[in-house]
Amino acid sequence: MSVLLLIIIYVAFISLGLPDSLLGSGWPIISVDLNTPLSTAGLISMVISLGTVISSIMSDFLYRKLGTHKIVVASVFLTAVSLLGFYFSYHVIWFFVLAIPLGIGAGAIDAALNHYVANHFKAKHMNWLHSFWGIGATISPLIMGFAIASTPSWRNGYLIVGIIQSILVIVLILTKFLWQKNGQNNDQVLLKSNRLKDIKGLVPGLLTFFGYCALEASAGLWGASYLVNYQNLLPAHAAMVVSTYYLGITVGRFINGFLTYKFDNRQLIRFGFVLITIGIVLLIFKSEYLFFIGFVLVGLGLSPIYPSMLHETPKRFGANNSSKLMGLQMASAYIGTMTMPMLTGFITGFTGFWIYAMILCVFLILMIISNEFVNKLAYKAIESNDLKS
Image (cartoon, rainbow, N blue to C red; front, side, top):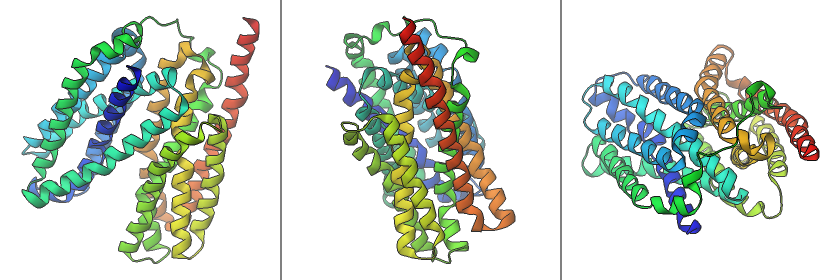
């Protein structure tokens, strides 16, 4: 039964990735149809991110009140309603309104499933879980492209994904017994968590997540602009190079699932730092081949860090603090995604794109230092408590 439940969780994470790239892939046509500037997509994306931050912060409260199954059902339902709402939207204001429940639903299901997998499955499943998110994010532009090419209407792209989400809601409701048989009916009964100020390594732990998403989002968003405006690549070539970055993240997480048999999470995180460092250095040289290798290495280096840090949460901070910390960590990550790419764009607009690699190095250094502080403070505190008991 646990295998079937795991399959459902994987499918749920594919569905989590579906809406993430739907807006961007359809926006060139949507903006014309709704008579709104191209830049509006950035504001809508920020509203979605704000919703994910709010629901991530509330995730511990919701988890203790409702349990995993109810949160997942409600969250997927919210995303389904939002996506179907986009289908019926004939004014851009509805995109802003519907972005709120879409973000709240995405953040809640993200935190709930990550917390569950971190506490109930091995590290390989956490890596594969996030690889399945990449599958969803890859499929959704194809769905939108198919809808535009065959209909042609961007609305049918949202309709298709909304129907997929609605079917998943029904599947989740009908498979409630799986969650109960795997102990999820009692997951509200948790040990009392510590006060935040008493949790050792909390601040550096949050900074590590912030730094990770700052680097991941900034590298992807501004990579092509760096290659075109500073390294003088053709736009088509730059787009191809940056696509290997996302491929590196997705494929890397699949590979990391097997590497967990040989290495623990802390080793994989540090190995990821090494790959990112080499990748960023290669981006400095004026060679298209090295750009390909550099972005692939940065993607491969990033691939184990986020899922490994999430899976380590119960070990770092204690199982009783896991649900609370999972939400806070993801909120910190979303804040990094929401703010740092914008700041990177502002800095590069002022100084030029020569500083792009240096900015990525700053985010990387923040991650490395924060991660080592977590290793020093959090694990030491947990080991000390184990000795006392």
